[in-house]
Amino acid sequence: MEKSKFMESGHFPTLIAAFLYFDVSFMVWVLLGALAPFLSEMLKLTPYQKGSLTAIPLLGGALFRPVLGFLGERFGERRTGLFGLAFTLLPLIIAWRLAHTVEHFYFLGLLLGIGGASFAVALPLAGRWYPPEYQGLVMGIAGAGNSGTLIATLFAPRLAQKFGWANTFALAMLPVIVVLVLFALLAKDSPRCSEPPNWKAIAAILREPDTAWFCFFYSLTFGGFVGMASFLTTFFHDQYGLSKVRAGDFTTIVVLAGSFLRPVGGWLSDKIGGYRLLLLLLAGVAGCLGGVGRLPVLPLEVGLLFLSMGMMGMGNGAVFQLLPQRFPDRVGLLTGLVGAAGGLGGFFLPFILGAIKQRTGQYSGGLFLFAGAFFAAALILLQLGTKWRVSWQEESVERAGIFSYRGFPGTPVGETVE
Image 1: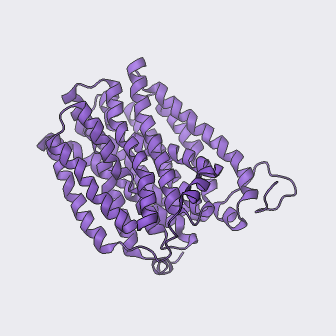
Image 2: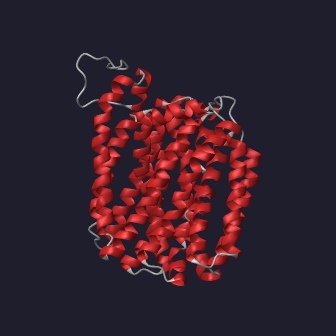
Image 3: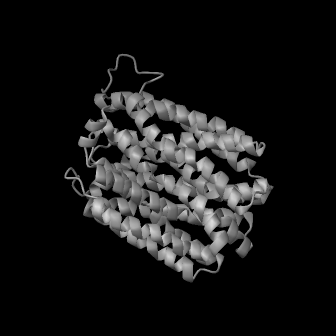
């Protein structure tokens, strides 16, 4: 791929705007998780409450994502993105001045979900500008905005230690305002925007079995990534006795892999196909999480988590390389639906880890449970390849790298089995 050809094939300022919007929104989205040790100490939270505190913003993201996806299709991603950034300031102001009880923070967590919903706007905003052969790379670059989690885990504990947790929410408003201005200047809706969907179109997409499968896979890859990113500060603090700031540092190291390997996942998906890559990654994450669940010494635990998060990040890029191959005309709406599933997956991870920790005194059970879920997903995807190879368009099958370990004899690629 020639760099000049890629640059000329779309609108690069919009791609940068999408990345920045995604980045600062994710910073805000996981802010409660990064500050959880401080808030837990102040509010004297149980393990179950700690899990709930870090999980609720992820649930909020799942609730907001279909809404922003629909608004983006109806009114354009640029206007929807401006609205999302402006709305993000509201929970930060409330947290700064008014939040004092665990119930307050549960409510704030739902509002902070607007940051997680940025996915439904940023990806189609960038993706519509570029042809199919660059979708994996474009989705990876824009999606690398999940590196905003790094900003939260690295700086929020330090700011809270120096200025207090309340003032940390106030300081978080500054980058949001800067990105709001830059987004207004750089972002531009693509002339290739699809027609706004009607309710029949939405219902038709929801009836598609492949929609449910994409939601399932993304609930694991993205849900696993963001759920871990939100909860690991608490995990390192409680399980290994690290200080609040040091726990944030180790979380940052681990999250680094998932954030910056996402574009690599998109790029590799363009090269070998998102299906092939996703299959390998699901199996790899299952093995690594099985090791994480054994709670080994800290250096080994960090290494296994680093590998797990890296593969999850690449898996996110692989899923979004597959989406436009299957649903090229409804990328925005599907991004919202699949993203909502990712948020739900992220919600369940810290929630279940906290609940099992309170019941058993260990995190192992929850980690083994999620390892099993990834292994099951790999087996399911392997089976789905048999169906997709004969039901998708031939060009999409080739781009996705779909193969069948147990093909239908005599059925050509791209031909549907009755």
